[in-house]
Length: 102
Image (cartoon, rainbow, N blue to C red):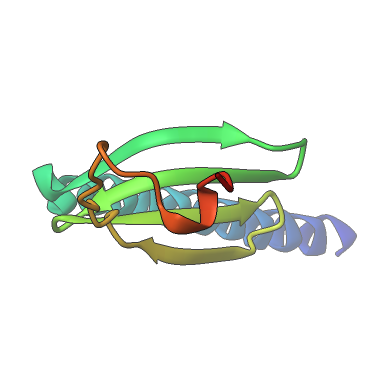
């Protein structure tokens, strides 16, 4: 009697482990497919770890640049970085606030 209960429990455990393994394989394949769908419009420009649990990443996607901050625990925040506007600076004139008194 006890042997049959053990076999049933072992069978349920085996089927459960097989199900978890199949589910994890499906998740891994889905992640690979997602990376292929992103294509050439998505690039990681730079990636740095700030400490053991926090990192930042500079990403370019669809002609825009984003700063992504993430933690090892799964927290993520991002901000679009606007391109710098080029200022026209005339080099032949010192602004009035920087001129020395005569």
